[in-house]
Amino acid sequence: MEAGSLLHSHIPWNPPKRPIRRRIGSSFPRFFISRASSSSSSSSSSNSERGYRGPKPKRDWVADWVSNNDDVVRSLPIYVGGVSLLAVLLNRTVSGIAPVADASSSQSRSDLLTLGLAVTNILTGLVWLSIRPKSISVVSPQGVECQRICSNLPDSVVSELLWVWESMSNVTCCRSLIVVYDGCCILQIGCAAKSSFGDGEAVAVDANKLMQGSLCQGVIKSGTQSYLANLSLYPGKSELPFLPSNTQAVILQPLGEKGIAIIGGDTIRGFTSSDQAWITLIGEKLDATLAKNLNSLPLAVQD
Image (cartoon, one colour):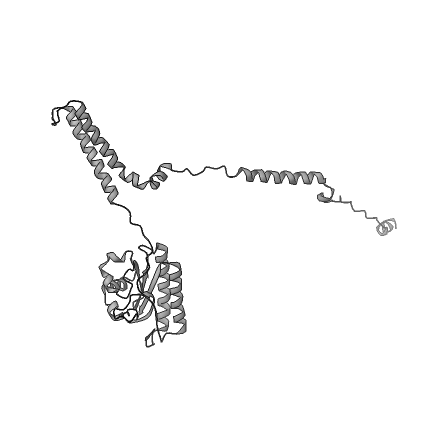
């Protein structure tokens, strides 16, 4: 009975009390918070005032002076050689040495050596003055604006061709674009050469003659882009009579085995390496579009 009563008896449960956690913000002294915030703001402001204390790039004063005084530097050897030549002649006159060079005299040998160095300096200065880097500037194409698009092209192809033209003309130095595909000129846009008939029209592209030329044949056979950085130096310029006469640079971009894109620029070496790589990607995309849509379409050109 005692055991049963003990089991049934009420045992009070008093759980241990946990310490009540208070927010630091409510009981933390306000003056300490404000003081800490003011100290952090002052430290940040002092750090910003200090600025960067690392190594600073050094300025090359000699290179800056040479670039700012290019004419003086180029003519400096002439002045040095002239002064050296006069000094040798003056020394020869004042020292009382015979004006005729004597091989047995050490003074004569040194004077001859100095004269050679002085003449070399003068010739070097003349060469520096005669050879100057040619300034490259943008040229305004001499021709007429034209926009000839094949009339039987689907709207998607026309929109892509116009997108290619707008992209190239806005981003690069492209001022003329001709696209020949499957023996037909499907696009001639931008500045073109003016016709000799006096009608004010642009010179039309003879696609068959163009594709049989050495320039296009070489590009299509190789399958790689050809960049004529200075068109005036290439004899193949005569194969591109439809471009303005003062076209500075040309890119020939193959479009598979059936076509080619000709991009004319207004600046010598105006197409950068990134431009050339980008034009190559555009050519591959345009080739895929044309091969997909122009297999069974009769082509005709409209103005």
